[in-house]
Amino acid sequence: MSETIVKLSYLAGATRFRRISERLYVQGDHIYKAAGIEFKASWFSVYYVLVLAESPLTVMQIAHQIEFSHITVKNVLRELDAAELIQIIPNPADKRSKLISLAPKGRYLLRQLKPTWLAMAAALKKTFQTGHPDFLNMLNRIDLELEQHPLHKVVYANLGDPVKILDYTPSLKKYFYELAGPWLVKIVNGSLQEEDLDSLHHPDEAYVKQGGFVFFASYKDHIVGCVALKRMSEKTFEFAKLYMNPTYRNQGIATKMIERCISRSKENHATELWVQSTMGMQQAHQLYSKLGFVDKEAPPQMQVLARTEKIMYLRLP
Image (tube, rainbow, N blue to C red; front, side, top):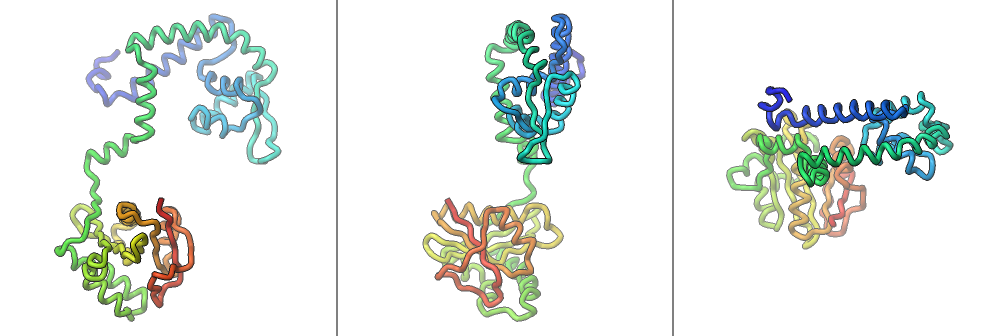
């Protein structure tokens, strides 16, 4: 082991896993060659899935079972096909895909492989347990941790997310009109309804004191977005006046504001979250749909605005 790798400690984690993997593949190939078996260690996972399969599989089905990339599976299948160990036929249910199964030669080879695999399993157990008696469970825990908490998200959290979603405070009140006011005036061609004027200048009166909430998005200490969560009834909320400074769009900030509306609604045991919109806001509609909102007729308790052309709804669990 090189001194450089040792000094890098955890930073060399992926490098060391890769090096160990490459060594295992190379040494596995030596074992197969010494046993007189025409087989490669890198084929094992794909081949074994086909051994267990009760019917032909697609590339995607194989990839899903072993959690390999589509291209990796295709590359292995190409080599297995060249070795005449598999057979590939058209998929009658989908002309874009193929069905793969073991060829007679591939099934016959299994008889030679089984004794070799037993010997390899015993040797691998001894090698792995040199590192730790619970090595396989340690690998399972690492695998699960990376799945549940992707490394980039952990690093991002440690560095500090530049985006913060803030609850209403009197010092933030002015930003509600500064952000949403000009945008809304443009939407309605310069003619705001009385409810809009009141809510823009006094979001605390219009929403907070009525049992709702107002949130602001802060990006590196700059207030760049706002949204109101209006209480419609004991179990129902509507979010409104969602606005993002154009300079800071397409960074996921609007999504975070809506997610805060959803989580706050759930915290208040609400079962429904609504939003009113106009047909010109297609990008917003796509975002709402992505978050689970669907089109629906307005509920009786909703005060439908004159400009509203589309109403969407999210059922909360």
